[in-house]
Structures are given as C-alpha cells and as structure tokens.
Amino acid sequence: MTLKKIWAQGLCWLCRRTDQLVTFIGPIEVNGKRAPAFACADCCNWSRQYVNAYTRQLDARPA
Ligand SMILES: [Zn+2]
Image 1 (cartoon, rainbow, N blue to C red):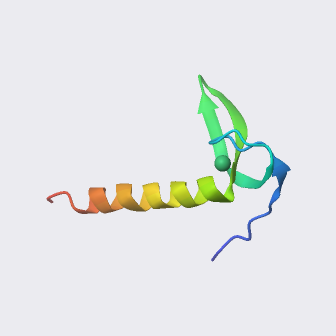
Image 2: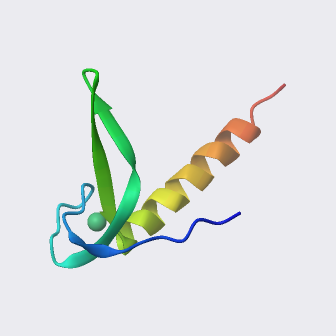
C-alpha cells in the first residue's frame, strides 16, 4: 500500500527553504517533545537514498 503524499507550501525542516512544496515526513522528537516535520521533494529524494544506503549497509552485515 502506498500512501498518497499531500504537498503544501511551507518550511522544509531539512534544507530550511520556504519556496518549495513540502510533505509530512513524520514526527520529530526532541527531549520528549514532538512536532510534525515536513520536507521538500529534493530533501525527500536525498532522504530516500540515504535510507536505502543505510539499510543496504545493515543487510550486508555478517549474520
Ligand atoms: Zn528541503
């Protein structure tokens, strides 16, 4: 199942630009307090690549 992303004008929490459409990327927790975080398409793509590389690294660990 793929959730449909909703894009809106706002602040990207990763690059801090405000001139891009952003989508919800999940809650961010700092010292027990949570806030919704949003990211632009470029940062979502970068995050996707980072997560894929990270999980490939985990999968490559010896059993
Ligand atoms: Zn961004």
